[in-house]
Amino acid sequence: MTAAAVRDTPAPAVGVVLCGGDSTRMGTDKASIGDPPWAHRVATALRVGGCGTVELQGADPCLATSDLAVVA
Image (cartoon, rainbow, N blue to C red):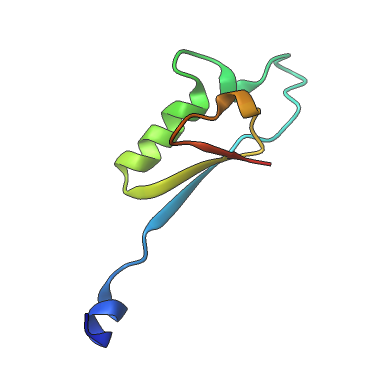
């Protein structure tokens, strides 16, 4: 690959779903509401939009899947 081709090739996009907060007003974790959970629906939208990697930031570890990492 030439230097020009490397320069003109866009870097893969990384999507991050922010899932922080105590959810004190709702009384339940908003990221896990629904079926599929809200956080997974947002992650799917990011993938459809072109993100090669998607992570859940600050989410409950039970939301992790084989292709969706939870980052503390």
